[in-house]
Each structure stands twice: as C-alpha cells, then as structure tokens.
Amino acid sequence: MKLNSEQEKKIKNFVDKQGFKLLELRDDIEDHLCCVVESDLKRGRTFDQSLRDAISELAPNGLIDLERKTIFLLNSKRIIMMKKLMYFIGFIGALTLTVGVVFKILWYPGANKLFMTGFLLLLLIFVPMLAIDRYKVAIAKTLSERLKIVLGCVSGVIVGLSGLFKLMHWMGAEVLLLAGAFIFVVGYLPFLFFTMYRKSLA
Image 1 (tube, helix red, strand yellow):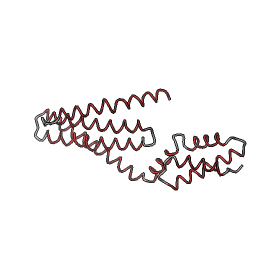
Image 2 (cartoon, rainbow, N blue to C red):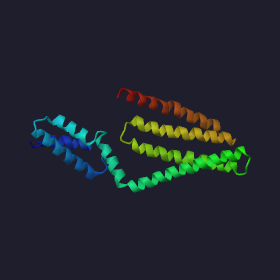
Image 3 (tube, rainbow, N blue to C red):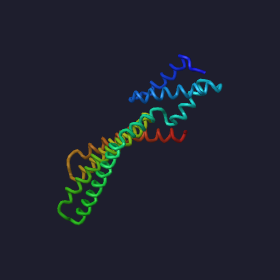
Image 4 (tube, rainbow, N blue to C red):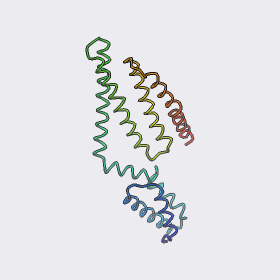
C-alpha cells in the first residue's frame, strides 16, 4: 500500500521538527521511514503504529542521535585528537599540581609556580574542555541535563578560583566563593536532583 500525500507530509513534518543540520541525512531518514512504513502498511498495520515502530527501530535514542553519531564518524579523527589533547592537558595539570604540592611541603623553590600552573591547567582548560565534551554527548538530551553540565562547570571553576585566591592571599576570594556556591546551590543542585528524580521514574 502506497503512502498518501497526507501520510508523507506527516513523516516529513516529524523529521523536520527534529532540527537536523545535515540536510542530506534528514532526507535519507525521511526516505527510510517512508519505505519502512509503506512496507508495514502492506502487511495490514496502521500508519501511526508503523511510524512509531520504524522510528524506535531506527533510532531508540531519538532521530537526532543519528546526526550526532554521524557527525562523530565524519569528524572522528579531529574528535579523537581533541580528546587526546584534553586528557593530556589533564595529565600535565595533575602532574604539575602534585609536584607543586610536594615541593611546597619540602620547601623547594618554584613550588608556588608549579602549583599555580597545574591548578590553572586543570581548572581553566581541562575542566571546561571536559564539560564541553560532556555537553556534546548530552546535546540530544533534555535541557535540564545540558544546564546541569554548564552550571556544574561554571560553579566548579569559580569555587576553584576562590580556593586559589585564598591560598595565594589575593583579594576577591570571598566574593568568588559566594558566587560559586550560589550557582552551585541555586543552579546546579536543582537540575542534578531533578534529573535524578526523572531517571528514578523511568
């Protein structure tokens, strides 16, 4: 049984609403869904049920997840390089920070510079890069999931900076601490527990 114009339009509208950026992929998905639904209709199934099953079978995590995976495959080399860079920076930051702490305990020269370098590498480069990476993974998920990542990163960086300011006896440590704590309590925690609550009901 061939799809009528109304059914084709319904499939097209549904696919368009997903917000695909890769137009060729969008058209391929639309064609695939039309073919699968058309095949199911020949076996006597209803249009709505056939469409739901076709979508579920093609993309259990949502159609937009296909685009994310496609983009990853198309840019896999660049993404892998970025991940290597991110974890290398994290390793260097952690190593430098640890050496700085040891030097500080043993009263060796250069302890403060090593400590600050490692701390800033982790806080201002590694943590934001990690948050961006997690955000890209969660881009197809709910707004609360994405906001949780953003607010968690922002509050963590601000609180971390306040700790550094306090250790170095710089002005503004208390303001940074209060700002970071406020974002953490008012912004991050509600989204964290909201997503945990939603997952518990799933």
